[in-house]
Image (cartoon, one colour):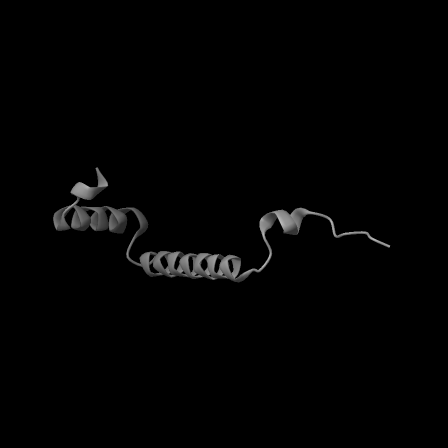
Length: 65
């Protein structure tokens, strides 16, 4: 369904968003979405660089004496 969208559909969606939110709020909405995407990318990158497996992170440390 989403794959069948054309340029006209995008323009119609943009016009509806302008009517609902108003032109003044759209830049703030776009900025918020950009910040959220940037935060998500950073967290995903941190997860990939983390050397510990999730199972090791949850397991208690060895208590050998």
